[in-house]
Length: 589
Image (cartoon, rainbow, N blue to C red; front, side, top):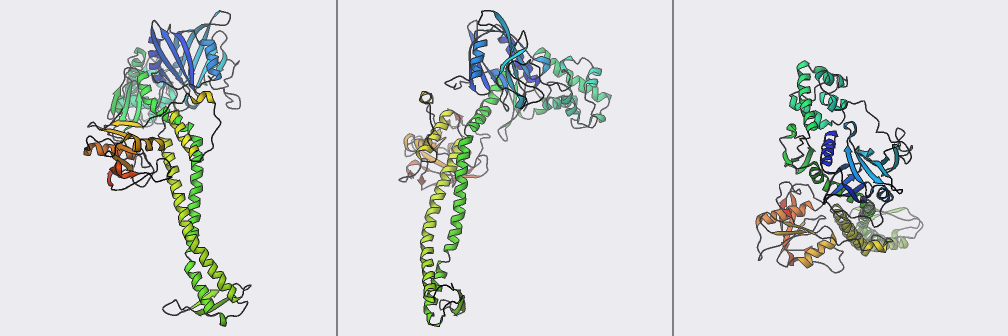
């Protein structure tokens, strides 16, 4: 899924139609690699998101409200000093690259009108946001400073002259006017597939667009360049030219392609791709709406995953220790199974003590406990007398008997801890905001799994209380899903009624799910949809034929001293569903 030069061109087209003349009202930096700029012109407000994230780099208008740090980062303060109160003059895309340049005029501290360039480089892991002084082309600062240690080819540091990212000997496709220019522009690698030659030869063209050019030309994209004849070149140029005409005219069709079989996004672009027409297509009024729809959940999940990384590592380490403990307890239990053998040895030594001599390494006697009365050899400690050897075996017998009970108890405790910590990992997969992480962290402090960290008292009031998930089934029944253990307890024992339906994945970690019944009744459709949500928000996510237990909420109870989210239940039935949301018609409310 590529944010290629064509998508960037559509963004620049949208920004150019709305932003010139806009005044920069506020600048925020909610993430280390992301800016949100509030703009205003003629009574209209816009909020622009600039992201230099290595995975989700982008620029678009946004309506999403994000939490800002209580103390603005240094780069944010620097931009406020130089740009706040300034006006956007123009927006450019240099050489059809994945670069957007905002030309901004603002007054400096001497009240002199200066022009600066805010340059957003949308290049994957090399993405950056750079402020440049227009008059001298000198870098003032950047959201990511790139020193010589990081890159020997190109440094991005205050005081250096700004240069464009290293060119890759590609041509600007918008400048290609005829077939000869198209053919000459193609990289002469005759054994490479056609689509690869096309995207390797022209800036701003991704593999996705190269395949579209081949598809529209009715030329196989995988055949080598040397297999093309003159007619193929003509068809490819005609297809290429048609797409470039759309870009020049700005007649974009922002589209998202979705595989209904899996419910996953296949790709997106702004040209209307014929070779992906067999997927369901959602079109948007603007590139910003397309990018916001595509990236919002992906980016949020990725950032939440990064923020929970240390906590995941901590929990995973504890789980590993518990798994090792279970393994060692199993070994102890296997040894403890020798208890009866030790008792028999002790009894037989005692019964034959008059026949034994000191300092013997072993003795062979008749085993009276064997129906066949076979002879058995008993190992002896030569340092001990026969009576002392008998006492040693009796002591070992009593030790093993005690161990069997203790090992079983310790194993039960370890299994309970494993179930709890695996549930925590599931909860971490479902966090959507900082408040979710704080709830889980607070729970782990209360249960003693992590130490309380030093907090800034000024910041504690900024964390909002999070809420459980609420859905509406396709036939109108409310469904509640807990995102963590505290929410699981809340919806099970505070929100739901005793005759509502409680659901949970069978014998593995997962969220509590409540189906709100209407006068004690529910439909099979609502049950299946609630069960699917219970499967999706569990360890069985995306699995098939997931067993989901369901029972009336009154049959669910919490044992004394149980950890948050841990319950027992009875009088249940089981239904099997798939653990994905493909085709599910519930609505989040």
